[in-house]
Length: 91
Image (cartoon, rainbow, N blue to C red; front, side, top):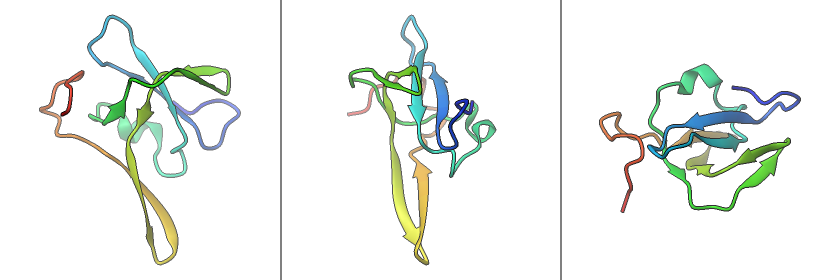
């Protein structure tokens, strides 16, 4: 969902197969609408210290690639095959 009072932040609740949901805040609203990402399998770094953003504690970071097309910045989240289960560890 979009974070209130922010034009660029989206708030995600991730199922990482732990006992509690993980909230991640990401500044990607310029590139994605929240409904585009529902049900997607995203790659996240989850061993980071929590960080407050707009008063919401973010407990991780989504991985993405930034690149340019004709001088315009683009961003793509790293998405995994949906056959990889939530909470899988990558090596």
